[in-house]
Image (cartoon, rainbow, N blue to C red; front, side, top):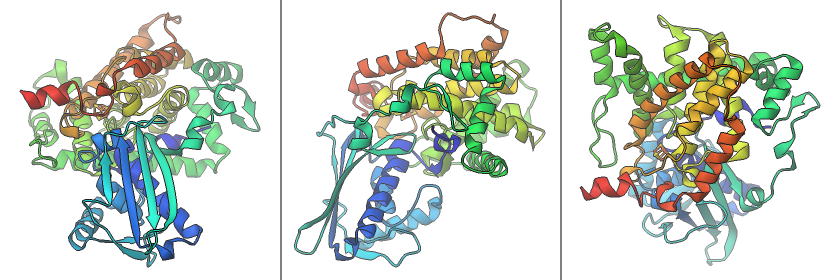
Length: 464
Ligand code: SF4
């Protein structure tokens, strides 16, 4: 089973699949080269990005992420400012130091930023749209290591072998050696019913098999702190976002207005707060800041926004509620990851913002005291009204429509939780059905609308 910390991972913006994933792949490749003893003979490295990774790679910072990964940076510990300086220096000197760990001496090689990293959008991968090939050569141009990996969404990475081999555990719903295994929402609800516990309890029990509970609490609280710090930075930083689209940050200005006249528009206050929190996170993400995947970077603002509005009162965080929220949301996120995908390149934006909305709705319903059935219903509503949502980022940047879309997603998540808590017990559409519908819709969706910037707003905004 996945862990809550597979779903909520600390990384840097702007994209979990195009920034965090490629950085992890590059890092893993160099580690492998070090472990097999070939790194010391390396004279040249070639990186090829294929499919969606190439088509939106520059706007999503994939090239920079690859170089940083080769130089020993890991997404969860990277300081964005330091990373920027290191990348700038590497570009200026046309040299990179290949390191399996950041504090290693490493092995320096020349690196031609024009030819040694190639964006091959003309290659359409068959295994997964986000393909990355790395080849290490010695001084005689002999291949030392040649590997292909995939960035499969939310910062998860995999080899072709891993992707093509379907896990036998995918559809098992039985508790095995202290771990509750579930492959469906129905399975999750059955466990909750049989054991008389909540979805958050089930996920926590599974975490208990990995580490002492105290440590899980600390890590969950840390996830919240990183989310909140990201939001705080986004609420302070003004100016234009990088990338050339000339998109101005709006969160600080909106926050200022709210603080100056907190009761100016009481009826719409809920929207304003959710909007400002979600946009603060996604503007920070667009600027390459430190972000928690929730479950992806592009959709990273929805869960922190709802958490902050409903689990923090007068500046005091209610950690019990925050843990319940995160555990429940992670349980729902695992279902999407296991049964479909959380990759915009595979599912369109329904797989990112739609999933985040569904997770947030479930988390909030749990915090409001909803039964497991109501939580499942909230998650279902959260996705049902995001089905078909395309991914068409303008300029290949995670800005338009992504930033506002998170604000809309946060509001929708709250509404989904409310609808579920006020509904009668039975509902026509189950979470399993809606996840399967999302998967089928994603498969049917034209690749133009799956993180390629070849359709939708990405084409029309530029033309207008
Ligand atoms: S449109 Fe949605 S899926 Fe695509 S990059 Fe933006 S947030 Fe991610």
